[in-house]
Image 1 (cartoon, one colour):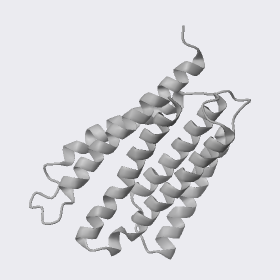
Image 2 (tube, one colour; image 1 turned 180 degrees about the horizontal axis):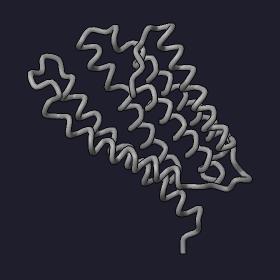
Image 3 (cartoon, helix red, strand yellow; image 1 turned 30 degrees about the vertical axis):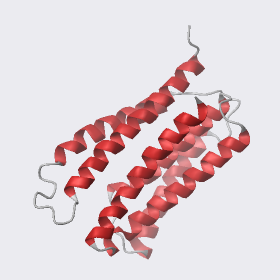
Image 4 (cartoon, helix red, strand yellow; image 1 turned 120 degrees about the vertical axis):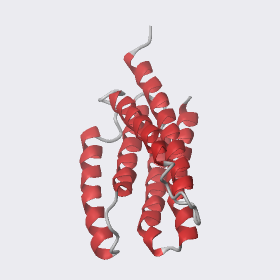
Length: 187
């Protein structure tokens, strides 16, 4: 029989794969809908957002259902969630007021992804899948990747159509690659 912890590891593996699939559909939509000089401009690619949404929600549910050893967590799980909410509110204000960037769903997705990754690294650490140093390195890498995504988010409307097209792909690629790296790092 599998233990609760084995089930959690399996849920994280599956959740990460689901998020990669979500990113593939979202990226496919982006490639079609925002392609410069594209005469159809998203009218025929909008259906790709539905599977992206379904796989994304399934990923979040799968990872959120995983649990670790509460006595061995690196960070308090409630602290991760509260920190994510505080960071999101602060970034809404900062990006809107300081950078004059209209708030879009992508900001929520960037912060939500960071919270999700922190939670799963925390759980995997508590289950002995990562050393303290390994977990801290992955947390730092996650923050760096979220900052890169945030820079792309802030810059998007100030870029020409071609650079903006590429800029919009970067966060999706970052998320997919990081989820694959996390899966490969502990199996």
